[in-house]
Length: 143
Image 1 (tube, one colour):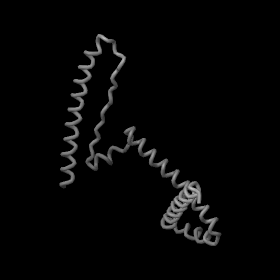
Image 2 (tube, helix red, strand yellow; image 1 turned 90 degrees about the horizontal axis):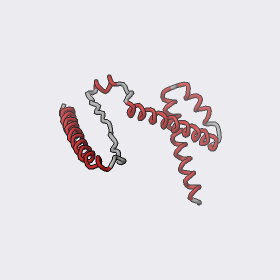
Image 3 (cartoon, helix red, strand yellow; image 1 turned 90 degrees about the vertical axis):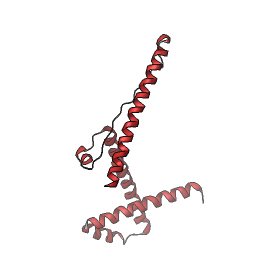
Image 4 (cartoon, helix red, strand yellow; image 1 turned 120 degrees about the vertical axis):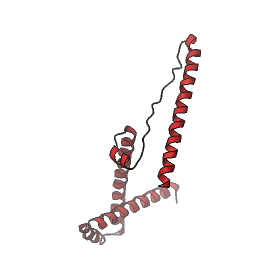
């Protein structure tokens, strides 16, 4: 058996399993889907697996889309703040600053010192925030 065929076999098995799981969840959630799925059992095995694989591909695409949207919301900060506040969560936002490597020669030494001092201050601030978050987490765990 060729490795490409084996890879396709595993991929199809994955999609069939995903489609079957999705169908099972639909049956559990919606009683009318039970009769539809029972009628489908009269078909050939190849037809059933082909339909389940197609459903698995669709389910995977929907899941990826949902996860991508969720991550984008988390990154953009457009999540529901009331739910995170009610859970006692704290969000810390920081802004990254870039260092201009094309500074004139006379000022590069001066800017290097100010950048190093700025970075040191920012690292200290982040360390304090991290310590604060750790203590809050320990308090939440102890409750």
